[in-house]
Each structure stands twice: as C-alpha cells, then as structure tokens.
Length: 246
Length: 246
DNA sequence: GCATTTCAGCTGGCATGCAAGCTGAAATGC
DNA sequence: GCATTTCAGCTTGCATGCCAGCTGAAATGC
Image (cartoon, rainbow over all chains, first blue to last red; front, side, top):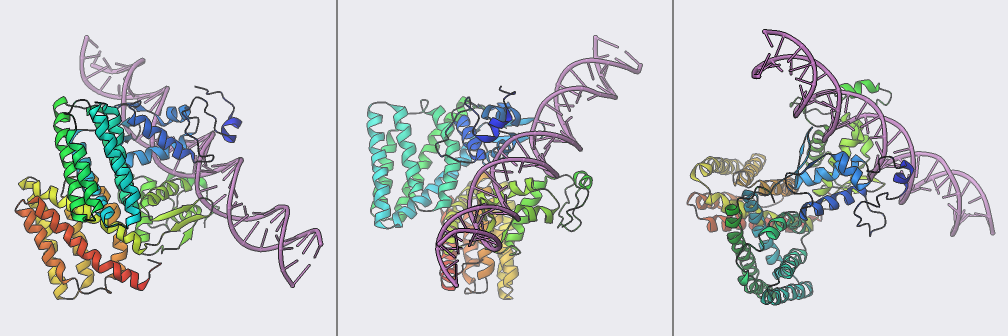
C-alpha cells in the first residue's frame, strides 16, 4: 500500500494516516512505536499464532522503514512473542501449556517477592498502592456478582499490575510486565472456560491484609498461593482443549 | 582507525585483525558478537562505569559497522548495563547499592522457584544436575580451606548457574542469567572485603539435600535463605565503601 | 511419469548515507 | 572583561541499498 508515496513526506513527519497511531507523545522513537503496535496486535490476536510476515510488509503498514521494525522484532523475539526465521520471515509464536507453566512459575516467584517488598515498605508507599489494590478487589467482587467477566478480568489485571508497580523494584516491574503480558493472552482465551473465579476475591483480600499488617512472609505466601491456585485451574483447561494456536 | 581501508574488504570477510575475535562459530551474527564482546568487557571492567563512547568508535574497534553495535547496545540497555544518551553517546552504568538490592530480590525469588521446580522434577533430570551441584559445593569447601577465594567464586557461580540451568524452565534461566550477570560485577569487587563465606557450604548442602529428598518447599526456602544471607552481607559493604563506580 | 537438478525470487543482516538535535566553544555586543 | 548569541561538530535514529542464503517450483534427464 502507498508504495508510490513521496519520500519527502516520510522523512518529515509521521506518514501513516492508515497506520494505527498512539503518538500521544510528540516525538517518540519509531522503534518504540513499532514495538508497542506489534505487541498490542499480538495480544489482540490481530496477529494470531502461526501468522507469518516479512519485515517489509509490516514496515509498509506502519509507514516506516525496515530498520525500526527490525529492532522491535529483536525485542519481541527476546521476550518470546515471535520467532525470526532467518530467511523465511517473522513467525508469531503459539503459547503452549508448557509455556504457560513456565510463565506461572515466574509469576508466582516474582509477585511473591513484590508482595514481600510491599509489606516491608514505608507506610506512605504502601497506602497509595493499597488503595488501588482494595479498589480493584472490590471491583472484582461486584463484577463477579454481576457475572461480568470482562470487567472482572480488567480489575484483576489492575490488581496484579499495581502489586508489582508498587513494590518499588524496577527490575521486578519489568520482568513481571514481560511475563504477565504473555499470560494475558491465555487468560483471555480461557476466561469463559473455567469455573467462576469465586476464590480470587478472598485470596486478594488475604494479600492486602498481610501487606497492611506489614507481615512480609505472610504477604509473599498469600501472593504465591493465589498464583498457584490460578495455575492449577488454567493449565488443565489448556491441555484439554489442546491449544496449539492462541 | 583504518578509515581509508577499502570497503570491499569490509563487506567480504571479517576485517578486524585488531578486533578481539571469538569467531569459533563459523557464521555467527555480527550483532551477537558485539553483544558478547561488550558484555564481557563490562564484566571485566575494561569498560568501567562512567565510561562513555560513541557507537562509531566501538564499531571501528570491532571491525563492523554501527548497525550491529546499535542493536547490541539496545539489548544492553534493556538489561541495565548501559544507558543510551540520545545524542551524547553510550554510558556504562554504575551499580548502586539500590540496584544490588533489586537484583538480590529477583535472585531470591527466581532461584527459589528454580530449586522448587528442580525438587519436583524427574529423577533423571535431577541426578545430573545434583552431580554438578554437589561437585561445585565440594570444590567450594576445598577452595575455602585453601583460602583460594578466586576458585571459590568460580565454583559458587557454577553452583548457581547449574541450579537455574537444571530447573527446566527457560524463562527462569534467561532472567537469572541477565540478573545474576549484573551481580557478578559486584561480587568480584567485594569478594575480598567481606567475611569469609564459611556458611555458604552448609547452605548449599541444605539446598542439595532438600532437592534430593524431593521436598520442594524446603528446597525453595533453603535457596531463598541462602541468597538472603548473601544479600545481608553484601549490601552493607557496598554502602560503606560508597561505590559509585563498579 | 518420476526423481533430480537448477535457478529465480524473496528473506533478513549489515553497510552506508542523510537528517535532526544537543553541546560547547568561539564570536560578538555592550 | 562579562554576558549573550550563534554555529560548527559531534551524536544517535532512521532510510536505503547491497549481499548471501534458503525455498520452492520449473525444467531437465531418464
């Protein structure tokens, strides 16, 4: 598309009226734009597993050259979303049950550590995070009563994001973002296939209470137990429906 | 250097007789070579914290163009080793005590999870890893008796590498490699400043025993306690000597 | 008709060229 | 002599062009 467009336009400003734009920040790097676009497209299943494309096409679609797309692909490969087949193209990877097991192991460990840190943090740092945690948990409870699973899912993700966000450890934050991003794909698919997550509210509340009382060990254990529980529900479902494509 | 060299030579083969070569693999990517070279150089303190350079110079030194160096730098920035100052150059980052605290939090969590997985693994998978763990621990004990701290350090790193290597979780492996790589820098510096690591042998043995008996919870707790102990020794030292440069 | 070979076309990896922007020092105004 | 301004020289970010190598299908031999 738009192959004959003048290059002067490309060079001067963003040139993709057809490209999805989240250019709120006035001057952000092309490579970053490409990365976020591709990541979102994979999450939203616009680029389903098994999808294959050339850097060329994606670059054209985004109105930029291959270079920033290439850099974005390298990052996405690092994070396990795609696989670069050296002279065949880009392949969007599927998430196997084995992958999910790996991901949950990491989440159990990382969020447990985050809860411990949070419980040991200063009162000010805790209180603002605890507000979000409590609000998310309340929202989950009411969404569950209304059987609104989509709202429940969003509140649940907000809870887990706030947990690692508030722990004050940038490395934990980054690792959790990478890994939980991967799990979100699976959770969306299985959301309506598993039993109603009625236990989640109580488990979240237990995490909140332990953090509030400053009991690091209890907070870590509660966070780990919660993720273990979720893993126990999720993985058998995936195995049963034998997903090769997410 | 060699600015007037013919371009034909550059294109055809590797052109740096002056560049450090680990080109054992016949046809491996330039970007990978650059990444490994820079990472090692930072570890070996050939590029100390605070060092600043342009992609240009490093590319010339490695006998390649800026492109693969640029990609390597992006990865190194992701992993926290360098900072790209948008139009100023590459800055090798220092490791502050706060960074080390973050790193140890992650290591505690990740290696704990690895030990748990390992304890739950099949007998065959466990036994080969346990051999390495036991051999490393024995080597540490004898090195300690001989007061050979350098040998001790190498054996200790082998133990921890084997722990995450053997757990069978690729994501844990990758994350641990990234993060523990960062901590190695600090450990080398502080190796001779802290009390003799006499407790390490027993702690390692406790981890081994728990894995061998298949007690996942005990293995995880032992691994976490070991890293917590190390953190407790290391961080005060760093604070005391007020390192801004590692 | 089938197996083998060849070759054209596409792929990503890298080199190079160009542009935008910050820095710091020289030049100018007072 | 000091403050202000300007501008040249760096830097990285990105576009583009070239190259080697794999793929798959057409062409050839039998």
